[in-house]
Amino acid sequence: METLLEPCINKRSAFELFKSQICHRVKELGDIGFMIETLEKDEIRSYYNREWYGESFYLLAMLDYLSRLNDVPLCTNYDDIRRCKLEESLYPSGVLVMCAAAKNDLAKEQAMQDAIPEFLHFNILESEVRGVV
Image (cartoon, rainbow, N blue to C red; front, side):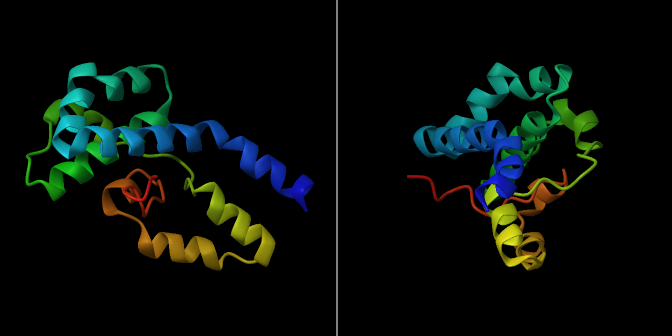
């Protein structure tokens, strides 16, 4: 079973770590602090220019999500990137493991229903960004 799941888990493990680091930054800095730091560093554009689209879109989705929650207008510097999205849906590794174990796609369907709209816009299925420990 582990051998079958290894490609799914290892394929996105670096991205899963990236997501975790971003969620921890939000927790440590607070919403507004995270937003300010992200805009000052311009990491969204940097990742996009490197063609690291998953990271770029994840950061922009997080920025847009936090903007909505805090009634902050969207930063228009990234409007060109907002017109893009990943070609294939990007599911959390846990969802992929559940689908493989159950031999069905019910976990993917649930992830689609639970997805935060700002992440779903980029074809990233993310439903929990606050639960880091």
